[in-house]
Length: 72
Image 1 (cartoon, rainbow, N blue to C red):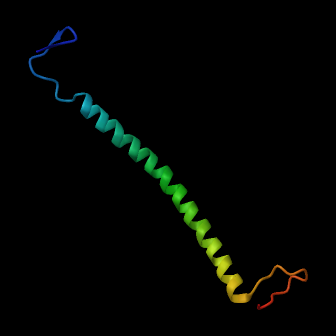
Image 2: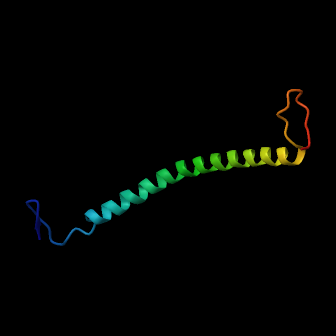
Image 3: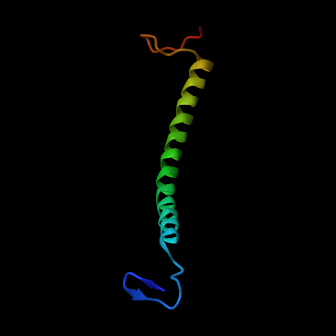
């Protein structure tokens, strides 16, 4: 078997497709961690916003000039 001017006794097992799969898996593993961190941050922000909205609904709107809570 001859390829690129060299003669091999058997066909190379690790070919271009295998290289692409290996590189793809490595990239997925690297970027999975960064996406996971971004999602956790977004979930935390959503929980904080939800807590604020629930507090406003439960205790009323605090957007008055005298900063006192009112139940509307």
